[in-house]
Amino acid sequence: MGEVWTAMGAISGFLATVTVIVALIFARRQLSESKLARDATVLQTIQDRYHSKERREFRRRIYKGEFGPSDLFDRANLPAEDDIQFGILLDELEFMAVLVDRGLLDFDLVVASFPNTPVRMWRYLEPSIRRRHQITSTPQWVHLEKLAKRYDEHYLKHHGMRHPAFTEPAFGTALVPPPAPGP
Image (tube, rainbow, N blue to C red; front, side, top):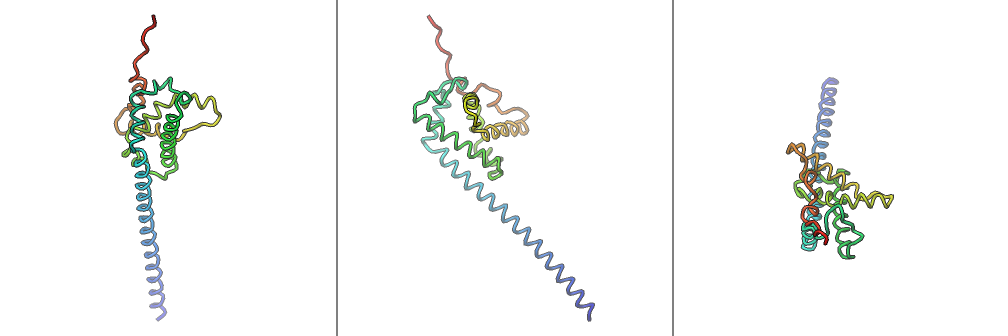
């Protein structure tokens, strides 16, 4: 009779172990699903703000070259409202970049949702940001820079070439006509 109890104990222990393993697998799947839901919610919030009429209009002005070529752009010369809009745009992109850098937002999901803007904005603002880094000792928008470089690596891996934002002139530069010749 002792052998039966030993066998039942072994079977019971085995079943308990299998139950724990199944529960762990289920819990891991739940965490994955939870992360995906969080990613979608965060990304939707970012997109809602990003695609608001006010933000679209401001990006359109940037893309048209209204603020001048990227190598001459300086936020310090902007009217207060435009400076605020640039600050909001940069902060939103930096926030998204921080989330990606910390693994709180999936990079591939960001690329699918924002295929060009983060890298194009980085390329346009990079000269101004570099000048600002020289003036202030606090580097700003470093996560956006990392995100832009990651976009470039991703593009190279999937398309066999660098992202066009890194191989073509920054959009403000190409869209602003050269100054008229002097007298």
